[in-house]
Length: 266
Image 1: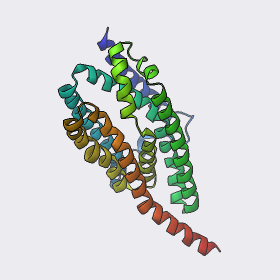
Image 2: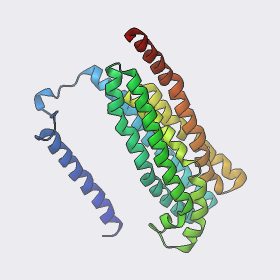
Image 3: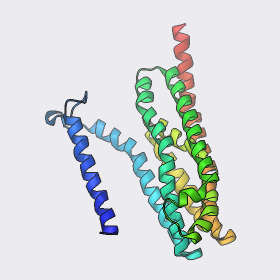
Image 4: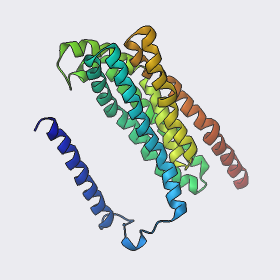
């Protein structure tokens, strides 16, 4: 069926996944079950869910905006070859982002539970742990892509021209990718602790304020490589700014509450 088959496979997989999830949440293997009589919307809960979910929504929207800007710029300066290379890069990025993002997201229930229980010292320990593990994981994956870019490209294409031009493009694009672990953990921490405003800010800042403008401006001066360098610059600025903002707002508040709790206990 060609490309249509791939599209159909995607739709079928989403349907099967939805059915399986619903069956699990209404079955005997879960502690909290979905029940018809309990599915009554309450405004305060709906607002809370929407405000926190907005971070993920904004992440998706900004990714789409950046993809459009990148493809338009690549078409202008490099043509179809570089659009193909960027498609491969985005696929690689999706895969190597998952471990760090998974660790960050998995910390949210633990952080949220301890935050609600006013165990602020445990929250700080959790933040430290997830930051270190996510950073180490992202660093190892970044090193793998940087040292063996041809191997990753050949998963998708054996076109020699794509491999040759794609090798340098990948190294530029993923330069400093490990810094994205700070973006992942900073945003996950904000969502886990119910800080909706910070979470949305982290989602918008890197993509809209840094990546999109640089993707348009840099190629005017340094050519096609500017598109890939724009992402590298955003890894450092976006990741660092995101985590520092989290430390200076959420982290500062946690340290203060943690010390107050220790004083009361002693």
